[in-house]
Length: 441
Image 1 (cartoon, rainbow, N blue to C red):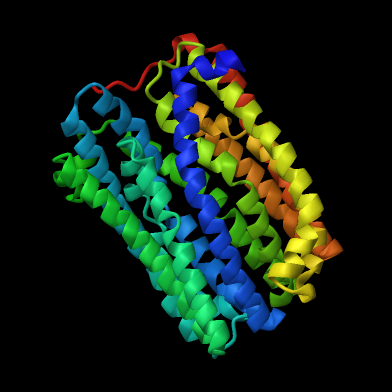
Image 2 (cartoon, rainbow, N blue to C red):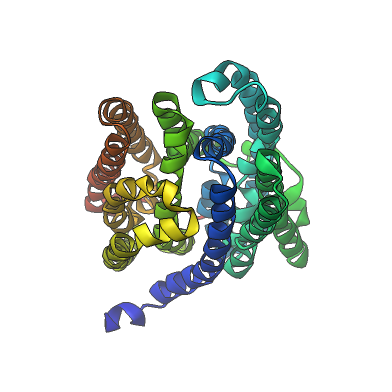
């Protein structure tokens, strides 16, 4: 371990993750306040509908999202490292243009499909107008240019600060809705405003940082013309979009599947369990966000980035074991305290899903290593196979065993993702001598 921390890149990964953890810890507390107010003020059925409306917009945003932050980090990081500011500007311009186009298309598609799908997921006629308005968040939910820009510019401190904005506004609005008895409409408006303001703050940070560095031209959206100066751009963004669209919609889409099979009450319970689990799994996600930009500065033909992946994975997996124990011991009293005893059924689901934390956290570096090795197609195939298998299991087991089946499917899906990613990663490592480093042309 002493040798691990002697590695400057490893320390940088942990430092950046530390910035993000500080924001997420504060945000998690405020998020719990918001969920507690909503859970206690609303009946389980109405709470479930609120979660379904939010999940629908998140699903649409996830399907429309082109993962432009991945493209920015992969291409702009080595460009800036080698002093090619013009190429870095082109990368951000292309990503921004793609975000605008995909976000608008996603919003229109979500609004068009919702009236047909609403009744199947528990959204009635009275709730439908609010759900349609909520779909206007899809463009900001599907945009990743701002966060990619801040990661490339090593401003993880700003990202950490932004992570608190949405939870704070949501907690304040939820508390007001609870005390003033504003009902479903009050909580729906709170969720909408907090999501919108949080996304806008991230953009404000990105604009200010680009202005400070004299790079505001990067925010002139470009698409086809800009892409011609970036060989391979379309191939990369389409591949990562296909891989991440379904994967990013994993949680929200799961809520919709559970709602369609078991109804909005079960969807609300599933949302509570998955929200607590996502909060517990944040360390792995935050390590990944700090890890990916750093390995893009390293030569994939050397052992160093691969060894860095093993070290961070082992560290995250060990943390996952500790978190699972904490979830098993404290999950039930936490749900009772925050949401009320009427939601305790979510704890049985949480116990089944918690084991997946160790798997997800230990294997998180694999995806980044595949992108570093220019094996994005392998990552696409791995994620698609795993997610299709998971959704099939989720539908079948939920229909047969209820919420317990949903928990079993979640665990099996996490294992499937890890195994499907491990195989191509090992192959890329064995052939690392043939890889190329993403230096600008």
